[in-house]
Amino acid sequence: MLEEIRNLYENYDEKGRLFKDNAHKTEYLTTVRYFDRIFKPGSHILDVCAGAGSYSFYLAGQGHIVTAGDLLQHHVDIMKTSPAASKLADIIACDVMDLSRFADGSFDVVLCMGALYHYRNDNDKRRAVAECVRVCKPGGVVALAYLTEIGCLYMELNDDASNINELLKYRSGELEAVFTATTSETVDEIARNSGLEMLHNIGTDGLIYAAKHKLNSASNEDFDRYMEFHYTICEAPDVVGATLHGLWMGRKI
Image (cartoon, rainbow, N blue to C red; front, side):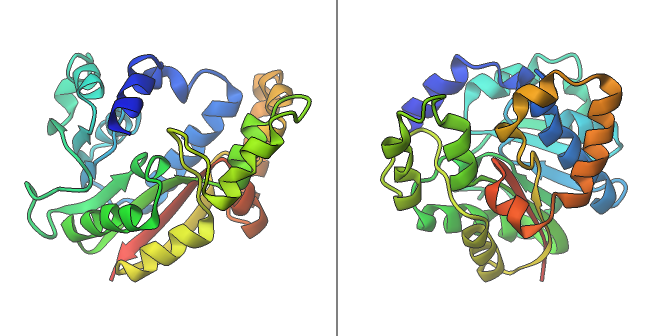
């Protein structure tokens, strides 16, 4: 699986993914909106699945003290060669499954913004979340990004629905793919049993992948108006259940 993940991201523009069009910007804009609302000024933050560093660099620019890490050396190298690299407290290669380099309660905020996209069984998800919770201070915040089964199905469905039988395996857990879908209920159960109380469960890109062509054709003004509408519905349970990208945020008890 690690080799599949490495091959995927080494041939993918992760740095530009969140900004390539309106549909993708919806996820980014919603996520940072919640970060700005919840994180205390000057927080010590561990972004353990930082990818190319989009959220790490943003948060550092907001005055937080950010350690950015990623499983893939490819992403670590991208962050280290960025003109903004000096804004980060540290850039490291790390595995969310083993954060033993950090003591218990080291950070005010821990972000896990990608690992749950790839673990195929819930025990691996629990282990990853447990490590995030361990290195978070009591009263601190843990953020867990995930992909939903319904969102993945609609995103990957062919125009003529000819691949529906294969995609329905998302519902049964049988689909062998680099990306792994789950449900908001599963993430909520894992997070709560790991010692977190929920603050927000957000459909960061809402139902955008069912209408992305319409939104990508929108004027800047209409897109801004859409986003204001999106912010009013992105925590509605029916939206969270069908979003592509979900974000569960909770406080360590």
